[in-house]
Image (spheres, rainbow, N blue to C red):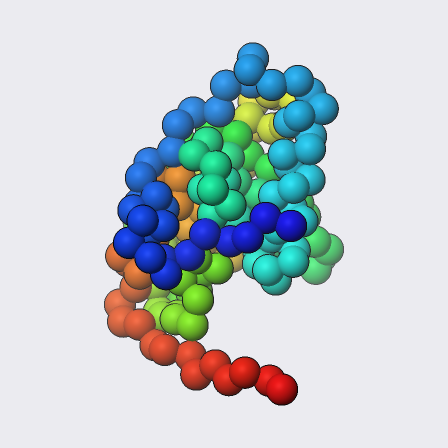
Length: 167
């Protein structure tokens, strides 16, 4: 499994804060793209995350994966290449947010309540998703990662989680 890149060192934080490069489908086979999505989905699952950007596993491409419950509570999986956000609502929602790359910290983070995400699926087909609530939050969080931003840059304050080694 791919280890999650964290802000533990200056070098890794600098990597996470460097904007990613567009994903070029012509440089990869369909099997390689499918394996990349599987690899990212597995890393996200193993880390108990709801989203994961490529730079969180050391790849500087514009791709993220996410798995969020839909209105019926069923888990919906997304793999979005070269995402961009548009049409943000004027309405914001502030909710507790954390990040796999910033372990042990969380905090209230304002995000647009609604956004429209455009990009490409793993088959290089255009996608356009109107999202609100948790899905919009995840899309904004992961797109921020791809732009070299971390949730700590937006959080109103940070709260340290006490962690103990279980023996």
